[in-house]
Length: 313
Image (cartoon, rainbow, N blue to C red; front, side, top):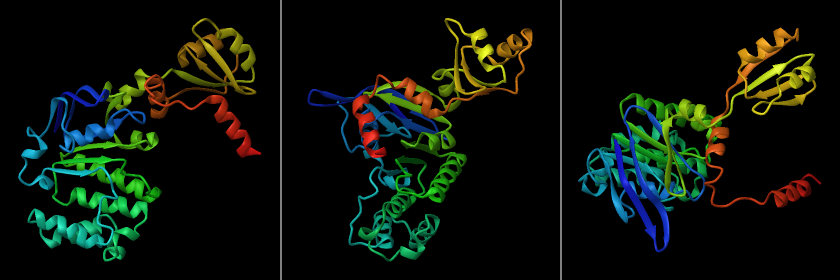
């Protein structure tokens, strides 16, 4: 379990983490989300004692990270996959870490196989691709068979098969009762992997809720309607709190009414419906809606459009 209480970190006049209080529970995968510059990496560094908080505290299984005599057995972390000696082989990198904690060679062999690096185990890590480096970093995090696993952007550089492997691995670890805490900018993947979300913006906590509840709270109800009388239906249901957008001829996306309300209205006016289906908003849509005002750097829309036009040309 990871417990943060009033966690704050300032760098001069800039506040990177602002009074964060949250708990990462065992047995589930908890996703850590936030726009660029929101303080996610700083928070993870504070958990590992790599930075000292300006105020507040964070504990892992009831202790500060620095208090663990053998931290690899308690917390496995991946913050920067490239933090390895480039002239050392993958096998020797893991072996050196293992020897600091009395971990046997057999565990190194086991992890090399688990992450799929058998064919390159004797190659220098400096020659690794980004995806191979990620696999080595994950092996390092799992070396001590820790109860808490914390990974920052673990799917960077991985191919679709590798991404699915990470997803299944995280769910397996959580199913064993471990605490799993991971960040990612891939919202589609987070939606498939995480059970719970902690979301921050500009260093502040803005959501601490299950994935399903997060999407429900921060997305609008959209009902997809297909009808040969779509124009008539759009005029019928339109109102101050209802919009009916024509996606294509005969196809509407209606916001502000339930599927049942639309169906009842259509039946009352003898409008034929070929499709009537609520559309579940994506995690990405809900995240963008919630964090719209929390983004530190906004792209200029006109410049973006000019660039897109230039690229298309």
